[in-house]
Length: 606
Image 1 (spheres, one colour):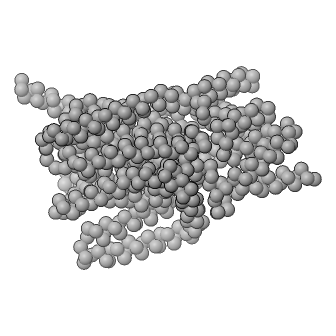
Image 2: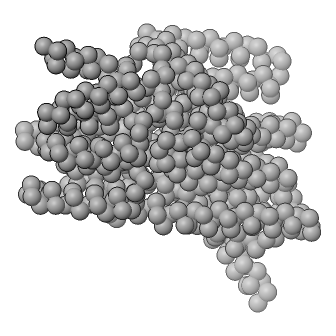
């Protein structure tokens, strides 16, 4: 009976860990799109879409609260394994980042960005405590096998699907979309239309650059895992070399210059830190030469200098915003709204984020948020690096070396890209951080550690309560917003019926959905903007004017709202107010609207 009971207990432990690993596996597959962007419409409307498409990034926060509650109940406040003060401090760092991120509300001109960003960071903090609890609930070997296994299989699926997209999927998509001709006009975002015509991998990720960030983070661990857990010795080298080749090929096929640069920098750093002096210099020079040649080829293929100039312009504007409000920050979303008239590069681009995780947080939420954000990534990197030196006789056989390699690669990449906004990347980095800081051996439960656990339980209760409260508002609101968007601008490829609604029926439906969405999302300009765009398309200038006036009340610094309001007023012969709004759009975003404003003024003067 005792043996049987013990066996049942072990099985229940394995089953719970399996469920944790599965939640991580499915999250990596489903959360590859940018979070905290209010204008991004990603919310499946039926069961089939939930299965096939990406999940809304806002759902990551809700899911993280649910699995945190689940892990906290299972752990029951007892630290049975691997307690480390480093991993405990990392939980606190993420919590304080979530707390200080609320300073981004103080100067935000539009609450949409602030709500979405704080909600997202709270989800990361919840996920970090979840990993801490489960890492203290199981022995090290099981944790490595299950949790790194979940990353391995998710990453492998992503990279294989990405290769399929590169060689076949995009052409099939283009052929399908091009079949909708004649009266069936496909309304797509211009950026998405452009991306369809580029033969890039993006797999479950919506951006090729962020996919490359995920791949450089995971490929070292995936290569090690494929070797370590292949049972037959004759297949170990074959399988691990195959996995390595697939990942490296995908990284280069993304065409991401930031990904290749980051991987090159981190590899050179690994060579300098961990390899013997005899081979260090030759390998370093070989890699440096390879990176230089690749960048030369990319410069020939594309305009590398202009890309660098745009990035530097982002950083310049972010620094200017930070200097204006160093303590509280300029407010979440301010970079997006202010970049149009602060930029020095002549382009119509309006970036949502700074493309640098340090400047993005620091400039918009203040110096304290920036400090905790840097600490959240550098702190585990430093601790894991020390552990490799102290405890590893052979670096290449230690799983922590591959975690360290991936985290360093990602750190470099986040200085150029929007990886921080991608839940799949951040949850993987958080998981790697805690697994890399695991202590060896079973430790006794001490009173001081029970007190520390009590603090984490209190913080967990606060996070879970806040997230659940906001989820009851945010998730239904985003669902209604997606319904409104789909009704206004249906995509034929997703249509379940060929029957089109009559114009009167459609107008009633749009009006009803707009009212529902505004009631659920009263502070957001997005429902009004979506309906306004629909009425512009229908040439219903009166309703379009009403919609964009309401959008401007909620987002008074959005240049495109003034421009579209001016169009609706011009067609109603309200020339005086129309000219004022054209001028306002031009002042907020001169690179995009100055030429249009001048053309309009020339016509009026004639």
